[in-house]
Length: 457
Image (tube, rainbow, N blue to C red; front, side, top):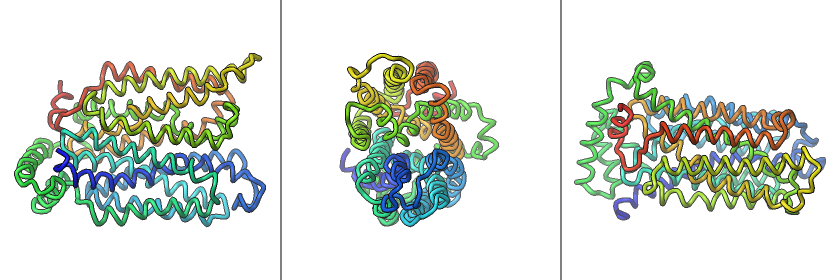
């Protein structure tokens, strides 16, 4: 197994660098925003402190870009190939980090966040698609879940580097990640065999599969026949309009949208964007906010390693249910702490450990299922002929929801209360848990064609 997996794994690990490039932007604000509030010109390149309105736009503009990104990159992936699309995603990432490094005005920060957001939206559209198409049915879940390891490594980097470096050098180092991806992916990775066979480029598809399957000719011949058969069954339903007219596609889209919207309504991006501020408000256990952020970043990263090893054994549905229930309970605890702090006169010094503990539980359970698996499942529920349409719509829904959650997180805390805000996030996740139990199919070990047959029932 490991011999046949070797080049496929190398390819996936290379493309995973783009996942890191994208998710750096999720926690980039945590060390940067406190510096932009500084009066020290050596710390704050803008020369004067920002205000809460500028802060909210810097935090949320990435989501506006990410709403746009799925559509051009989904089109490029379908027309010119997954590899071309992924290479083009790296370029805005590089430009945005360089822009942050040299920026002296808030408007350039807006530009960089918007541009980086376009790349993030494209990445979340094409990355799961590419990984699912180069993997085999037996290891597709494991390889898809490696994306989450690299996403979470991207979350960790700003926490560990940002507080201790100038904004200039911090962003120059971050720009090296997408640059490394571009060079390595260009040299190492083949095009998706599904795309090549769909374009009737059979010789190129065979070369791609021979690379991915370590020159196992028999396996490649069987896989080409299988992919050709699957594409033939779905080629008449591959237009954008037919996508909306086909019942099983709409069923798959509904499941994908509920899962991805639940992912964002868990409040994950609001928590990542405002980690230092949350712990500063909590006065958590005497720890400096930046140290609390590093702890959370490490928990995010370490906890991401479990899912790739169990997702093809325990299944997507079981892990999603465990994840959603755990997130609901952690929000209940986190919200209770803030409610007691802000709405009562009770002494809560005895439970100052609760914010970190409950957030650690949140992160671990999020990484178990709700973080990686909505992308895995949505990449599995659709045939290749309509996958770019579905991926673009799911990614658009993800980042639209994320924009509203991030943009209005501070407003919700002020109007509802901090504790009540986290309780609301927990309620959303509990409702999604019930939906998953009733409607989400188990896709582990199933071929794309078998999954389509399951949706028809």
